[in-house]
Amino acid sequence: MREVDKMEELKRAFLDMKRQEVLDLVKKEIESGTELLDILKACRGAMEEVGKRFETGEFFLSELIYSAEVFKAVSAILEPGLVSTREDEDSKGVVVFGTPKGDIHDLGKNIVITMMRSQGFTVHDLGVDVPPEVFIKELERTEASILALSALITPAFVSMKEAVSLLEEKGMRDNTFVIIGGGVTTDFARKEIGADAQTLDPTEAVRLCKEYGERRS
Ligand code: B12
Picture 1 (cartoon, protein in one colour):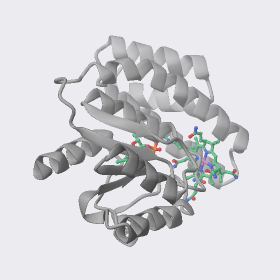
Picture 2 (cartoon, protein in one colour; picture 1 turned 60 degrees about the vertical axis):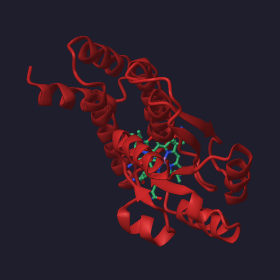
Picture 3 (cartoon, protein in one colour; picture 1 turned 180 degrees about the vertical axis):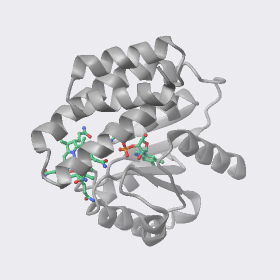
């Protein structure tokens, strides 16, 4: 079967909520040498479609919750492979990461954190629904120079903007690289929020943070 068809099969199993079939297909793809990031991309595409169907009323909250559970199980299979790509032992930088206040989505955040850690970053994960002042306190406590925010719902933009304003008030803005990501973010949102970078691609996120570290040193 062609690679494109296999990824379509994976997506279909996701949308049919067939947990075991999804997991079997993921394992089969890994065994046949498919890039882990391509498998992740296909699963993310399926989740986007779940979201669309939820929006149109075809799916309910139960499908949203169930698909999240399936995705978590997929992540557990993919993560060991993503971690093993680590190049060296030097710390690449310290990151404070979280999902801003009002938002409880964390699947994408957890993937990006895994990739960052595997590439040598020290990441302090604050979890979900994090108020702006908590991000600032953690940046002060850990002396991290990178603030990473993951948002999946538009109301979270308000608290992301508040976090950036607080950084400015505290005189910390110039020494903090603010990177945002998550399904609803765009470059337009980045500008509105006042962040330095935005991407949906975890590899790109790691690259941007490494580049920032190199510019600093
Ligand atoms: C699963 C899911 C849920 C699960 C979340 C479980 C969990 N533990 O995260 C549950 C069921 C809890 C949920 C709840 C809700 N959800 Co929801 N959910 C989704 C769904 C289907 C998938 C999200 C997902 O995990 N995708 C897979 C991951 C891997 O993708 P990702 O997060 O984008 O991450 C990738 C990149 O963005 C990037 N990335 C992620 N974070 C970061 C951070 C940085 C710094 C960087 C650089 C990169 C990066 O890397 C990842 C790797 O590929 C989306 C649909 C969609 N289009 O996204 C809706 C969606 C996000 N949900 C939505 C809604 C409306 C809700 C609810 C309000 C529903 C309700 N009526 O209660 C609640 C919100 C509660 C709240 N206050 O947060 C809407 C949001 C609409 C909007 N524009 O605001 C969406 C878009 C569905 C839709 N189309 O209507 N949801």
